[in-house]
Image (cartoon, rainbow, N blue to C red; front, side, top):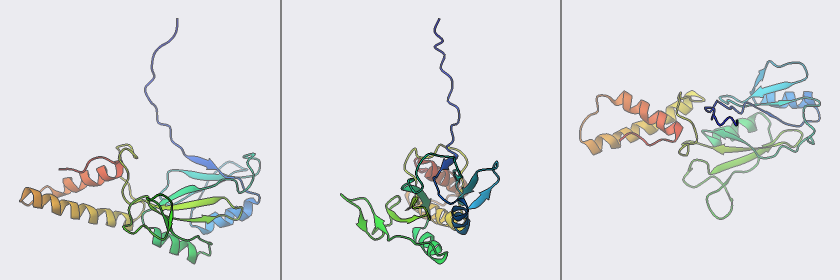
Length: 201
């Protein structure tokens, strides 16, 4: 008899991506210089986690048959792309020029309206593994499961609160009265913004 039971969905978290490097110590120095957290791992592996990220990278001898430098266009999402590029430049990382998407083809420079997901710049590690830094300020609907609302930095939270304040001001204009329960409205707005849900009415 065939078992036709359907199991409920379990969490499946992408937690670690293996990147190929030729010199482990050189790669370790590079990612430490970025300010990424060096995690505790079993011998033979080096693992780093970017600030605020739920996913890490790892490298080490014999961990992957891929050629060093063959990991390309890994996305590193940031709330302020200008600040991110300036910080990397100060650390001595060779960064590429800004470009933006949204038209028939990528164009030079930041997106004119700084729309979320549109502005980018590249950089590479010493082996040529490439990273694409992308500015994300508002998530697309359904991009994040509903759950705890988190922010990667005080600056990230401050910008979110300013967006909530502006949206709440429009809400009070529509209703024509002061909202004494503004804190709950803010909370619903911030949670919905991160999960891609609809803003409160």
